[in-house]
Image (cartoon, rainbow, N blue to C red; front, side):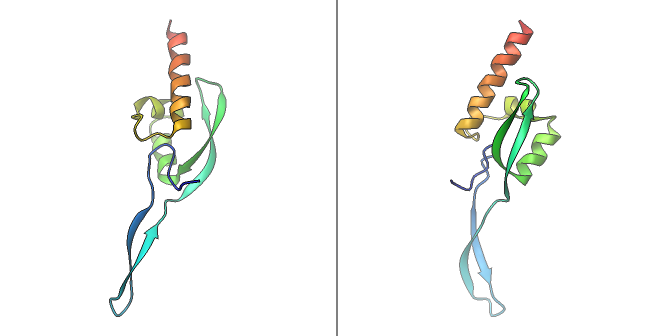
Length: 97
């Protein structure tokens, strides 16, 4: 399983460990990923995703999973998140009609 947030696309970054003698060795910075179940109001059920803590904060800031998915572009979402986005959009279109 790759270490990439399913909602924000945030992945690993590369940098250096710097010693007291200013020696630099390569290292990776991994995102803080959590397995969470986010509730979808439109679908009326929970959706299991692997999301970074930064992603969780943005979802809460935007008013829930449904609002976040509708605002997010498909290029940053994972395949499972795109599938959920499609289901949410379909349900909301049915309710509007």
